[in-house]
Amino acid sequence: MTGSSHRRPMIQVEGLTKHYGQRVAIQGLDFHASAGEILGFLGPNGAGKTTTMRILTGYLPPSSGTARLAGFDVVEESLEVRRRVGYLPETVPLYPELSVTEYLAYMGTLRRVGELEKRIREVLEQVRLTDRAESFIGNLSKGLRQRVGLAQALLHRPPILILDEPTIGLDPAQIIEVRKIIQELGQERTVLLSTHILTEAQQVCHRVLIINQGVIVAEDSPANLQAQLAGAERVRVQVRAETAEVVALLRSLPGVAGVAAGRQEGEVLVSSAPGQDVRPALARRIVEAGMDLQQLAAEGISLEEVFLQLTHDEVDSRGEGDEHA
Amino acid sequence: MRNIWVIASRELRHYFISPIAYALATMLFLILGGIFFINIYFGLQSGQISPDGRLVIGPMVTILLFVTPALTMRLVADEYRMGTMELLLTAPVRDSELILGKWLGSFGFVACLLLVTLVYPLILHRMTSPGVDQGALITSYAGLLLMVAAMLAIGVLVSALFKNPLAAFFITLGVLLLLWIVGGLGGGTGLGSDIARHLSFVDHFYNNFYRGILHLTDAVYYLGMTAIALFLGIQVIQARRWS
Image (tube, rainbow over all chains, first blue to last red; front, side):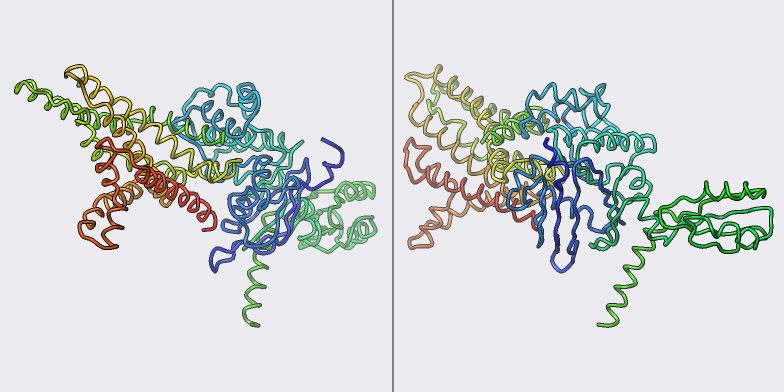
Protein backbone atom coordinates (compact mmCIF):
# COMPACT_ATOMS: atom_id res chain seq x y z
CA MET A 1 0.00 0.00 0.00
CA THR A 2 1.38 3.41 -0.93
CA GLY A 3 1.19 6.50 1.18
CA SER A 4 -1.31 8.18 -1.08
CA SER A 5 -3.81 5.37 -0.79
CA HIS A 6 -4.17 6.17 2.87
CA ARG A 7 -5.36 9.65 2.07
CA ARG A 8 -7.51 8.65 -0.88
CA PRO A 9 -11.05 7.97 0.27
CA MET A 10 -11.81 4.28 0.06
CA ILE A 11 -15.53 4.94 0.13
CA GLN A 12 -16.80 7.98 -1.71
CA VAL A 13 -20.52 8.52 -1.99
CA GLU A 14 -22.15 11.44 -3.79
CA GLY A 15 -25.81 12.22 -4.04
CA LEU A 16 -26.79 8.60 -3.55
CA THR A 17 -30.55 8.13 -3.88
CA LYS A 18 -32.73 5.06 -3.96
CA HIS A 19 -36.45 4.82 -4.54
CA TYR A 20 -38.55 1.72 -4.17
CA GLY A 21 -41.44 2.67 -6.37
CA GLN A 22 -42.87 5.80 -4.78
CA ARG A 23 -41.08 5.35 -1.49
CA VAL A 24 -37.76 7.11 -1.04
CA ALA A 25 -35.34 4.90 0.88
CA ILE A 26 -32.35 7.22 0.81
CA GLN A 27 -32.08 10.74 -0.53
CA GLY A 28 -28.89 12.43 -1.71
CA LEU A 29 -26.40 10.83 0.65
CA ASP A 30 -22.87 12.28 0.60
CA PHE A 31 -20.09 10.79 2.66
CA HIS A 32 -16.63 9.31 2.47
CA ALA A 33 -14.33 7.12 4.50
CA SER A 34 -10.61 6.53 4.27
CA ALA A 35 -8.32 3.62 5.05
CA GLY A 36 -7.93 2.83 8.72
CA GLU A 37 -11.21 4.45 9.57
CA ILE A 38 -14.23 2.90 11.24
CA LEU A 39 -17.25 4.83 10.08
CA GLY A 40 -20.46 4.28 11.97
CA PHE A 41 -23.80 4.44 10.30
CA LEU A 42 -26.28 5.22 12.98
CA GLY A 43 -30.01 5.45 12.64
CA PRO A 44 -33.31 3.97 13.68
CA ASN A 45 -34.62 0.88 11.92
CA GLY A 46 -35.82 1.69 8.44
CA ALA A 47 -33.63 4.78 8.15
CA GLY A 48 -31.95 3.51 4.96
CA LYS A 49 -28.78 1.97 6.40
CA THR A 50 -29.26 -1.44 4.84
CA THR A 51 -30.27 0.04 1.50
CA THR A 52 -27.10 2.13 1.43
CA MET A 53 -24.94 -0.85 2.27
CA ARG A 54 -26.60 -2.97 -0.35
CA ILE A 55 -25.86 -0.33 -2.95
CA LEU A 56 -22.21 -0.07 -1.87
CA THR A 57 -21.76 -3.83 -2.10
CA GLY A 58 -23.27 -4.04 -5.57
CA TYR A 59 -26.38 -5.93 -4.50
CA LEU A 60 -28.77 -3.12 -5.39
CA PRO A 61 -28.38 -0.50 -8.09
CA PRO A 62 -28.90 3.12 -6.97
CA SER A 63 -31.68 5.21 -8.50
CA SER A 64 -29.24 8.10 -8.87
CA GLY A 65 -25.97 9.38 -7.53
CA THR A 66 -22.60 7.67 -7.49
CA ALA A 67 -20.61 5.54 -5.12
CA ARG A 68 -16.96 4.65 -5.60
CA LEU A 69 -15.24 2.04 -3.50
CA ALA A 70 -11.46 1.73 -3.67
CA GLY A 71 -11.76 4.00 -6.72
CA PHE A 72 -14.23 1.79 -8.61
CA ASP A 73 -17.78 2.73 -9.47
CA VAL A 74 -20.34 0.38 -7.89
CA VAL A 75 -22.48 0.31 -11.01
CA GLU A 76 -19.95 0.47 -13.83
CA GLU A 77 -17.24 -1.64 -12.21
CA SER A 78 -19.35 -3.77 -9.93
CA LEU A 79 -17.16 -6.88 -10.09
CA GLU A 80 -14.05 -4.86 -9.22
CA VAL A 81 -15.85 -3.37 -6.26
CA ARG A 82 -17.13 -6.76 -5.11
CA ARG A 83 -13.59 -8.17 -5.20
CA ARG A 84 -12.47 -5.51 -2.73
CA VAL A 85 -15.38 -5.51 -0.34
CA GLY A 86 -16.12 -7.87 2.50
CA TYR A 87 -19.78 -7.79 3.42
CA LEU A 88 -21.70 -9.06 6.38
CA PRO A 89 -25.41 -8.61 5.68
CA GLU A 90 -27.88 -8.12 8.50
CA THR A 91 -29.22 -11.65 8.22
CA VAL A 92 -25.98 -13.59 8.12
CA PRO A 93 -26.03 -15.58 4.88
CA LEU A 94 -25.00 -19.12 5.73
CA TYR A 95 -25.60 -22.62 4.46
CA PRO A 96 -26.65 -24.63 7.53
CA GLU A 97 -25.85 -27.99 5.91
CA LEU A 98 -22.18 -27.10 5.42
CA SER A 99 -19.42 -27.16 7.98
CA VAL A 100 -17.67 -23.90 8.78
CA THR A 101 -14.66 -24.95 6.74
CA GLU A 102 -16.74 -26.14 3.79
CA TYR A 103 -18.64 -22.88 3.76
CA LEU A 104 -15.49 -20.79 3.81
CA ALA A 105 -13.92 -23.03 1.17
CA TYR A 106 -16.91 -22.44 -1.13
CA MET A 107 -16.78 -18.69 -0.71
CA GLY A 108 -13.00 -18.68 -0.94
CA THR A 109 -13.08 -20.61 -4.22
CA LEU A 110 -15.65 -18.22 -5.67
CA ARG A 111 -13.47 -15.32 -4.57
CA ARG A 112 -10.28 -17.00 -5.78
CA VAL A 113 -8.43 -16.78 -2.51
CA GLY A 114 -4.87 -18.06 -2.84
CA GLU A 115 -3.59 -20.72 -0.43
CA LEU A 116 -7.15 -21.18 0.69
CA GLU A 117 -6.61 -23.75 3.43
CA LYS A 118 -4.01 -21.61 5.14
CA ARG A 119 -6.16 -18.51 4.78
CA ILE A 120 -9.20 -20.27 6.27
CA ARG A 121 -7.11 -21.22 9.30
CA GLU A 122 -6.00 -17.59 9.61
CA VAL A 123 -9.48 -16.08 9.54
CA LEU A 124 -10.86 -18.71 11.89
CA GLU A 125 -8.16 -17.73 14.32
CA GLN A 126 -8.95 -14.07 13.80
CA VAL A 127 -12.62 -14.52 14.66
CA ARG A 128 -11.76 -17.09 17.35
CA LEU A 129 -13.54 -20.02 15.76
CA THR A 130 -10.67 -22.45 15.27
CA ASP A 131 -12.22 -25.04 17.56
CA ARG A 132 -15.48 -25.03 15.57
CA ALA A 133 -13.93 -25.39 12.13
CA GLU A 134 -15.58 -28.74 11.45
CA SER A 135 -18.95 -27.99 13.09
CA PHE A 136 -22.00 -27.79 10.90
CA ILE A 137 -23.20 -24.20 10.69
CA GLY A 138 -26.75 -25.34 11.47
CA ASN A 139 -25.60 -26.44 14.91
CA LEU A 140 -23.89 -23.18 15.86
CA SER A 141 -25.30 -20.55 18.18
CA LYS A 142 -26.28 -17.12 16.89
CA GLY A 143 -23.06 -15.56 18.15
CA LEU A 144 -20.88 -18.17 16.50
CA ARG A 145 -22.79 -17.84 13.25
CA GLN A 146 -22.19 -14.13 13.33
CA ARG A 147 -18.48 -14.87 13.55
CA VAL A 148 -18.69 -17.30 10.64
CA GLY A 149 -20.27 -14.49 8.65
CA LEU A 150 -17.47 -12.19 9.71
CA ALA A 151 -14.88 -14.80 8.69
CA GLN A 152 -16.53 -14.96 5.28
CA ALA A 153 -16.31 -11.18 4.96
CA LEU A 154 -12.60 -11.23 5.85
CA LEU A 155 -11.57 -14.24 3.83
CA HIS A 156 -10.36 -12.46 0.69
CA ARG A 157 -8.46 -9.78 2.64
CA PRO A 158 -10.74 -6.96 1.48
CA PRO A 159 -9.52 -3.40 2.07
CA ILE A 160 -13.13 -2.39 2.74
CA LEU A 161 -15.47 -4.07 5.18
CA ILE A 162 -19.18 -3.36 5.26
CA LEU A 163 -20.94 -4.76 8.30
CA ASP A 164 -24.70 -4.42 8.68
CA GLU A 165 -25.73 -4.54 12.33
CA PRO A 166 -22.92 -6.94 13.25
CA THR A 167 -23.91 -7.27 16.89
CA ILE A 168 -27.66 -7.57 16.54
CA GLY A 169 -29.17 -10.49 18.43
CA LEU A 170 -26.00 -11.34 20.35
CA ASP A 171 -25.66 -11.66 24.09
CA PRO A 172 -23.58 -9.03 25.93
CA ALA A 173 -20.42 -11.16 26.07
CA GLN A 174 -20.64 -11.89 22.36
CA ILE A 175 -21.26 -8.22 21.61
CA ILE A 176 -18.08 -7.23 23.39
CA GLU A 177 -16.19 -9.95 21.55
CA VAL A 178 -17.44 -8.90 18.12
CA ARG A 179 -16.77 -5.22 18.85
CA LYS A 180 -13.23 -6.09 19.82
CA ILE A 181 -12.74 -7.97 16.57
CA ILE A 182 -14.10 -5.03 14.59
CA GLN A 183 -11.76 -2.63 16.31
CA GLU A 184 -8.82 -4.86 15.45
CA LEU A 185 -9.95 -5.02 11.85
CA GLY A 186 -10.40 -1.29 11.59
CA GLN A 187 -6.74 -0.64 12.18
CA GLU A 188 -5.76 -1.17 8.57
CA ARG A 189 -9.05 -1.41 6.72
CA THR A 190 -11.94 0.87 6.01
CA VAL A 191 -14.90 -0.34 8.00
CA LEU A 192 -18.43 0.88 7.46
CA LEU A 193 -20.60 -0.36 10.26
CA SER A 194 -24.28 0.17 10.77
CA THR A 195 -25.95 0.07 14.10
CA HIS A 196 -28.92 1.43 15.93
CA ILE A 197 -27.13 1.10 19.24
CA LEU A 198 -25.59 4.41 20.25
CA THR A 199 -23.06 3.09 22.71
CA GLU A 200 -21.75 0.80 20.02
CA ALA A 201 -21.10 3.71 17.68
CA GLN A 202 -19.52 5.58 20.57
CA GLN A 203 -17.20 2.73 21.49
CA VAL A 204 -16.17 1.41 18.12
CA CYS A 205 -16.35 4.18 15.54
CA HIS A 206 -13.97 6.99 14.73
CA ARG A 207 -16.67 8.91 12.98
CA VAL A 208 -20.45 8.64 12.99
CA LEU A 209 -23.05 9.45 10.38
CA ILE A 210 -26.52 9.81 11.74
CA ILE A 211 -29.11 8.90 9.19
CA ASN A 212 -32.81 9.29 9.53
CA GLN A 213 -35.55 8.80 6.98
CA GLY A 214 -32.99 8.42 4.23
CA VAL A 215 -30.99 11.59 4.84
CA ILE A 216 -27.82 12.26 6.79
CA VAL A 217 -28.70 14.54 9.68
CA ALA A 218 -25.29 14.76 11.33
CA GLU A 219 -21.69 13.68 10.81
CA ASP A 220 -18.75 13.91 13.19
CA SER A 221 -16.71 12.02 15.75
CA PRO A 222 -18.89 10.56 18.49
CA ALA A 223 -17.37 12.96 21.04
CA ASN A 224 -17.82 16.04 18.89
CA LEU A 225 -21.33 15.13 17.91
CA GLN A 226 -22.21 14.93 21.52
CA ALA A 227 -20.52 18.20 22.36
CA GLN A 228 -21.67 20.20 19.36
CA LEU A 229 -25.22 19.12 19.42
CA ALA A 230 -25.58 19.59 23.10
CA GLY A 231 -24.39 23.15 22.51
CA ALA A 232 -21.82 22.79 25.25
CA GLU A 233 -20.72 20.49 28.03
CA ARG A 234 -22.09 21.18 31.44
CA VAL A 235 -20.52 20.48 34.80
CA ARG A 236 -22.48 20.51 38.02
CA VAL A 237 -20.36 21.76 40.95
CA GLN A 238 -21.31 21.69 44.60
CA VAL A 239 -19.13 23.69 46.98
CA ARG A 240 -19.54 24.45 50.70
CA ALA A 241 -19.73 28.22 50.16
CA GLU A 242 -22.07 30.92 49.02
CA THR A 243 -23.27 30.57 45.46
CA ALA A 244 -22.30 34.08 44.43
CA GLU A 245 -18.80 33.50 45.72
CA VAL A 246 -18.42 30.33 43.69
CA VAL A 247 -19.78 31.97 40.54
CA ALA A 248 -17.29 34.79 40.85
CA LEU A 249 -14.47 32.36 41.45
CA LEU A 250 -15.09 30.11 38.46
CA ARG A 251 -16.25 32.60 35.84
CA SER A 252 -12.75 33.75 34.98
CA LEU A 253 -11.30 30.28 34.33
CA PRO A 254 -10.07 29.65 30.79
CA GLY A 255 -12.41 27.37 28.84
CA VAL A 256 -15.43 28.29 30.87
CA ALA A 257 -18.22 29.74 28.78
CA GLY A 258 -20.64 30.54 31.54
CA VAL A 259 -21.53 29.88 35.16
CA ALA A 260 -25.09 29.76 36.40
CA ALA A 261 -26.45 29.35 39.88
CA GLY A 262 -27.93 26.01 40.73
CA ARG A 263 -30.96 25.17 42.84
CA GLN A 264 -29.16 24.84 46.15
CA GLU A 265 -26.81 27.09 48.02
CA GLY A 266 -23.29 26.58 46.74
CA GLU A 267 -24.33 24.73 43.60
CA VAL A 268 -23.38 26.09 40.19
CA LEU A 269 -23.66 24.86 36.63
CA VAL A 270 -20.55 25.53 34.58
CA SER A 271 -20.81 25.36 30.81
CA SER A 272 -17.66 24.97 28.78
CA ALA A 273 -16.68 25.31 25.17
CA PRO A 274 -17.45 22.23 23.03
CA GLY A 275 -15.08 19.35 23.51
CA GLN A 276 -13.24 20.93 26.45
CA ASP A 277 -13.03 19.25 29.78
CA VAL A 278 -12.75 21.98 32.43
CA ARG A 279 -13.28 19.71 35.41
CA PRO A 280 -9.62 19.41 36.51
CA ALA A 281 -9.19 23.21 36.34
CA LEU A 282 -12.42 23.75 38.27
CA ALA A 283 -11.36 21.39 41.02
CA ARG A 284 -7.93 22.97 41.32
CA ARG A 285 -9.30 26.52 41.50
CA ILE A 286 -11.82 25.59 44.19
CA VAL A 287 -9.28 23.79 46.32
CA GLU A 288 -6.70 26.55 45.88
CA ALA A 289 -9.30 29.06 47.10
CA GLY A 290 -9.59 27.01 50.28
CA MET A 291 -13.17 25.90 49.70
CA ASP A 292 -14.53 22.41 50.25
CA LEU A 293 -15.46 20.71 46.99
CA GLN A 294 -18.38 18.38 47.64
CA GLN A 295 -19.37 17.28 44.19
CA LEU A 296 -18.21 17.70 40.61
CA ALA A 297 -20.08 15.88 37.87
CA ALA A 298 -20.13 16.23 34.11
CA GLU A 299 -23.61 16.46 32.69
CA GLY A 300 -22.64 15.51 29.16
CA ILE A 301 -25.62 14.89 26.99
CA SER A 302 -25.44 11.29 25.80
CA LEU A 303 -25.37 10.39 22.15
CA GLU A 304 -28.76 8.93 22.79
CA GLU A 305 -30.19 12.35 23.56
CA VAL A 306 -28.37 13.88 20.63
CA PHE A 307 -29.75 11.19 18.41
CA LEU A 308 -33.31 11.66 19.57
CA GLN A 309 -32.91 15.41 19.28
CA LEU A 310 -31.66 15.14 15.72
CA THR A 311 -34.14 12.61 14.52
CA HIS A 312 -36.98 14.55 16.12
CA ASP A 313 -35.87 17.83 14.59
CA GLU A 314 -35.97 16.09 11.27
CA VAL A 315 -39.53 14.95 11.79
CA ASP A 316 -40.52 18.44 12.94
CA SER A 317 -38.97 20.26 10.02
CA ARG A 318 -40.58 17.84 7.59
CA GLY A 319 -43.91 18.45 9.20
CA GLU A 320 -43.47 22.20 8.80
CA GLY A 321 -42.47 21.75 5.18
CA ASP A 322 -45.70 19.96 4.53
CA GLU A 323 -47.70 22.75 6.11
CA HIS A 324 -46.06 25.39 3.95
CA ALA A 325 -46.70 23.35 0.86
CA MET B 1 -16.36 -19.59 -16.60
CA ARG B 2 -14.57 -20.95 -13.56
CA ASN B 3 -17.33 -19.69 -11.29
CA ILE B 4 -19.87 -21.75 -13.22
CA TRP B 5 -17.92 -24.89 -12.31
CA VAL B 6 -17.54 -23.83 -8.70
CA ILE B 7 -21.28 -23.27 -8.33
CA ALA B 8 -22.19 -26.36 -10.35
CA SER B 9 -19.99 -28.63 -8.28
CA ARG B 10 -21.35 -27.17 -5.05
CA GLU B 11 -24.91 -27.87 -6.26
CA LEU B 12 -23.97 -31.35 -7.38
CA ARG B 13 -22.43 -32.09 -4.00
CA HIS B 14 -25.52 -30.65 -2.35
CA TYR B 15 -27.69 -33.16 -4.21
CA PHE B 16 -25.54 -36.01 -3.02
CA ILE B 17 -25.81 -34.95 0.61
CA SER B 18 -29.50 -34.03 0.52
CA PRO B 19 -32.15 -36.59 1.47
CA ILE B 20 -34.62 -35.22 -1.04
CA ALA B 21 -32.40 -36.10 -3.96
CA TYR B 22 -31.97 -39.61 -2.62
CA ALA B 23 -35.71 -39.94 -2.10
CA LEU B 24 -36.29 -38.90 -5.71
CA ALA B 25 -33.64 -41.28 -6.96
CA THR B 26 -35.18 -44.08 -4.90
CA MET B 27 -38.60 -43.35 -6.34
CA LEU B 28 -37.20 -43.33 -9.86
CA PHE B 29 -35.42 -46.64 -9.44
CA LEU B 30 -38.32 -48.27 -7.61
CA ILE B 31 -40.70 -47.52 -10.43
CA LEU B 32 -38.25 -48.33 -13.20
CA GLY B 33 -37.11 -51.48 -11.43
CA GLY B 34 -40.72 -52.57 -10.96
CA ILE B 35 -41.57 -52.01 -14.59
CA PHE B 36 -38.43 -53.78 -15.69
CA PHE B 37 -39.03 -56.72 -13.39
CA ILE B 38 -42.64 -57.18 -14.48
CA ASN B 39 -41.64 -57.11 -18.13
CA ILE B 40 -38.88 -59.64 -17.67
CA TYR B 41 -41.07 -61.80 -15.44
CA PHE B 42 -43.92 -62.08 -17.92
CA GLY B 43 -41.45 -62.29 -20.77
CA LEU B 44 -39.84 -65.33 -19.20
CA GLN B 45 -43.24 -66.93 -18.64
CA SER B 46 -44.25 -66.50 -22.25
CA GLY B 47 -40.75 -67.46 -23.31
CA GLN B 48 -40.36 -64.24 -25.22
CA ILE B 49 -38.52 -61.25 -23.81
CA SER B 50 -38.94 -58.11 -25.83
CA PRO B 51 -35.47 -56.93 -26.82
CA ASP B 52 -36.60 -53.31 -26.70
CA GLY B 53 -33.86 -51.53 -24.80
CA ARG B 54 -36.13 -48.56 -24.34
CA LEU B 55 -38.30 -50.54 -21.98
CA VAL B 56 -37.71 -48.12 -19.13
CA ILE B 57 -37.31 -44.93 -21.15
CA GLY B 58 -40.98 -44.32 -21.82
CA PRO B 59 -41.95 -44.40 -18.13
CA MET B 60 -38.79 -42.54 -17.23
CA VAL B 61 -39.85 -39.53 -19.28
CA THR B 62 -43.05 -39.32 -17.28
CA ILE B 63 -41.24 -39.69 -13.97
CA LEU B 64 -38.71 -37.03 -14.93
CA LEU B 65 -41.59 -34.66 -15.56
CA PHE B 66 -42.17 -34.74 -11.80
CA VAL B 67 -38.60 -35.26 -10.67
CA THR B 68 -36.99 -32.30 -12.43
CA PRO B 69 -39.22 -29.61 -10.86
CA ALA B 70 -38.44 -31.15 -7.47
CA LEU B 71 -34.73 -30.98 -8.21
CA THR B 72 -34.75 -27.38 -9.40
CA MET B 73 -37.31 -25.87 -7.02
CA ARG B 74 -34.85 -24.81 -4.35
CA LEU B 75 -31.90 -23.95 -6.59
CA VAL B 76 -32.47 -20.19 -6.65
CA ALA B 77 -35.57 -19.79 -4.47
CA ASP B 78 -33.73 -21.11 -1.43
CA GLU B 79 -30.89 -18.62 -1.87
CA TYR B 80 -33.46 -15.83 -1.72
CA ARG B 81 -35.29 -17.43 1.18
CA MET B 82 -32.17 -17.92 3.28
CA GLY B 83 -30.62 -14.59 2.38
CA THR B 84 -27.59 -16.23 0.80
CA MET B 85 -28.45 -14.56 -2.49
CA GLU B 86 -27.03 -11.41 -0.98
CA LEU B 87 -23.79 -13.31 -0.45
CA LEU B 88 -23.59 -14.62 -4.00
CA LEU B 89 -24.62 -11.38 -5.66
CA THR B 90 -22.06 -9.38 -3.71
CA ALA B 91 -19.30 -11.87 -4.52
CA PRO B 92 -17.46 -11.32 -7.80
CA VAL B 93 -19.84 -13.66 -9.61
CA ARG B 94 -21.83 -12.63 -12.67
CA ASP B 95 -25.59 -13.23 -12.62
CA SER B 96 -25.12 -15.39 -15.71
CA GLU B 97 -22.48 -17.54 -14.01
CA LEU B 98 -24.79 -18.08 -11.09
CA ILE B 99 -27.72 -19.25 -13.23
CA LEU B 100 -25.58 -21.39 -15.51
CA GLY B 101 -23.82 -22.96 -12.55
CA LYS B 102 -27.11 -23.81 -10.85
CA TRP B 103 -28.48 -25.34 -14.01
CA LEU B 104 -25.30 -27.28 -14.75
CA GLY B 105 -25.25 -28.71 -11.23
CA SER B 106 -28.78 -30.04 -11.55
CA PHE B 107 -28.03 -31.34 -15.02
CA GLY B 108 -25.02 -33.18 -13.67
CA PHE B 109 -27.16 -34.87 -11.05
CA VAL B 110 -29.82 -35.99 -13.52
CA ALA B 111 -27.08 -37.17 -15.89
CA CYS B 112 -25.78 -39.35 -13.04
CA LEU B 113 -29.28 -40.78 -12.51
CA LEU B 114 -29.67 -41.48 -16.23
CA LEU B 115 -26.29 -43.16 -16.30
CA VAL B 116 -27.47 -45.59 -13.64
CA THR B 117 -30.65 -46.39 -15.57
CA LEU B 118 -28.45 -47.76 -18.36
CA VAL B 119 -28.20 -50.86 -16.22
CA TYR B 120 -31.64 -52.02 -17.41
CA PRO B 121 -30.91 -52.05 -21.15
CA LEU B 122 -27.52 -53.63 -20.38
CA ILE B 123 -29.18 -56.50 -18.52
CA LEU B 124 -31.69 -56.88 -21.32
CA HIS B 125 -28.91 -56.89 -23.83
CA ARG B 126 -27.32 -59.91 -22.13
CA MET B 127 -30.63 -61.73 -21.78
CA THR B 128 -31.68 -61.45 -25.39
CA SER B 129 -30.22 -62.42 -28.70
CA PRO B 130 -29.20 -60.60 -30.85
CA GLY B 131 -29.54 -57.96 -28.12
CA VAL B 132 -31.13 -54.55 -27.99
CA ASP B 133 -31.27 -52.01 -30.77
CA GLN B 134 -28.30 -49.95 -29.78
CA GLY B 135 -28.97 -47.17 -32.26
CA ALA B 136 -32.41 -46.36 -30.88
CA LEU B 137 -31.05 -46.69 -27.36
CA ILE B 138 -28.30 -44.15 -27.96
CA THR B 139 -30.56 -41.63 -29.67
CA SER B 140 -33.16 -42.12 -26.93
CA TYR B 141 -30.63 -41.29 -24.25
CA ALA B 142 -29.29 -38.36 -26.27
CA GLY B 143 -32.85 -37.07 -26.61
CA LEU B 144 -33.49 -37.66 -22.95
CA LEU B 145 -30.46 -35.58 -21.97
CA LEU B 146 -31.52 -32.75 -24.26
CA MET B 147 -35.08 -32.82 -22.95
CA VAL B 148 -33.94 -32.89 -19.35
CA ALA B 149 -31.63 -29.96 -20.04
CA ALA B 150 -34.61 -27.90 -21.18
CA MET B 151 -36.81 -29.06 -18.29
CA LEU B 152 -34.16 -28.15 -15.76
CA ALA B 153 -33.57 -24.77 -17.39
CA ILE B 154 -37.28 -24.00 -17.10
CA GLY B 155 -37.11 -25.15 -13.47
CA VAL B 156 -34.19 -22.82 -12.75
CA LEU B 157 -36.02 -19.92 -14.39
CA VAL B 158 -39.13 -20.51 -12.28
CA SER B 159 -37.05 -21.01 -9.15
CA ALA B 160 -35.50 -17.58 -9.73
CA LEU B 161 -38.98 -16.06 -9.65
CA PHE B 162 -39.90 -17.39 -6.23
CA LYS B 163 -38.77 -17.32 -2.65
CA ASN B 164 -40.77 -20.40 -1.76
CA PRO B 165 -39.42 -23.64 -3.27
CA LEU B 166 -42.80 -25.36 -3.21
CA ALA B 167 -44.34 -22.56 -5.25
CA ALA B 168 -41.50 -22.98 -7.72
CA PHE B 169 -42.18 -26.72 -7.87
CA PHE B 170 -45.83 -26.36 -8.76
CA ILE B 171 -45.32 -23.60 -11.29
CA THR B 172 -42.51 -25.53 -12.98
CA LEU B 173 -44.67 -28.63 -13.08
CA GLY B 174 -47.51 -26.56 -14.53
CA VAL B 175 -45.30 -25.11 -17.25
CA LEU B 176 -43.88 -28.51 -18.15
CA LEU B 177 -47.33 -30.11 -18.22
CA LEU B 178 -48.57 -27.34 -20.44
CA LEU B 179 -45.69 -27.91 -22.86
CA TRP B 180 -46.47 -31.60 -22.61
CA ILE B 181 -50.15 -31.42 -23.58
CA VAL B 182 -49.93 -28.57 -26.04
CA GLY B 183 -49.06 -31.13 -28.69
CA GLY B 184 -52.61 -32.42 -28.37
CA LEU B 185 -53.77 -29.26 -30.13
CA GLY B 186 -51.60 -30.11 -33.10
CA GLY B 187 -53.93 -32.71 -34.55
CA GLY B 188 -55.39 -30.52 -37.25
CA THR B 189 -53.89 -28.51 -40.07
CA GLY B 190 -53.07 -24.85 -40.28
CA LEU B 191 -50.66 -22.55 -38.55
CA GLY B 192 -52.04 -23.01 -35.03
CA SER B 193 -51.67 -26.76 -35.17
CA ASP B 194 -48.19 -26.45 -36.62
CA ILE B 195 -47.11 -24.17 -33.81
CA ALA B 196 -48.66 -26.48 -31.22
CA ARG B 197 -46.83 -29.45 -32.66
CA HIS B 198 -43.55 -27.59 -32.74
CA LEU B 199 -43.95 -26.42 -29.17
CA SER B 200 -44.78 -29.85 -27.83
CA PHE B 201 -42.20 -31.09 -25.42
CA VAL B 202 -42.83 -34.79 -25.97
CA ASP B 203 -43.41 -34.88 -29.71
CA HIS B 204 -39.83 -33.87 -30.37
CA PHE B 205 -38.74 -36.79 -28.26
CA TYR B 206 -41.14 -39.63 -29.04
CA ASN B 207 -41.50 -38.93 -32.74
CA ASN B 208 -37.79 -38.95 -33.45
CA PHE B 209 -35.16 -39.55 -30.76
CA TYR B 210 -37.16 -42.42 -29.34
CA ARG B 211 -37.42 -44.06 -32.73
CA GLY B 212 -33.73 -43.77 -33.40
CA ILE B 213 -34.12 -40.78 -35.67
CA LEU B 214 -31.82 -37.79 -35.23
CA HIS B 215 -33.22 -34.53 -36.53
CA LEU B 216 -31.38 -31.28 -36.11
CA THR B 217 -34.66 -29.45 -35.51
CA ASP B 218 -35.40 -31.53 -32.42
CA ALA B 219 -32.00 -30.85 -30.95
CA VAL B 220 -32.38 -27.17 -31.80
CA TYR B 221 -35.78 -27.13 -30.11
CA TYR B 222 -34.45 -28.44 -26.79
CA LEU B 223 -31.26 -26.41 -26.91
CA GLY B 224 -33.27 -23.33 -27.84
CA MET B 225 -35.67 -23.93 -24.97
CA THR B 226 -32.72 -24.34 -22.61
CA ALA B 227 -31.04 -21.18 -23.84
CA ILE B 228 -34.21 -19.09 -23.68
CA ALA B 229 -35.09 -20.29 -20.18
CA LEU B 230 -31.59 -19.68 -18.85
CA PHE B 231 -31.42 -16.27 -20.52
CA LEU B 232 -34.74 -15.32 -18.92
CA GLY B 233 -33.48 -16.67 -15.60
CA ILE B 234 -30.51 -14.30 -15.76
CA GLN B 235 -32.87 -11.43 -16.58
CA VAL B 236 -35.01 -12.33 -13.57
CA ILE B 237 -31.99 -12.16 -11.25
CA GLN B 238 -31.07 -8.78 -12.67
CA ALA B 239 -34.63 -7.53 -12.45
CA ARG B 240 -34.96 -8.67 -8.84
CA ARG B 241 -32.04 -6.45 -7.91
CA TRP B 242 -34.26 -3.51 -8.79
CA SER B 243 -37.29 -4.61 -6.88
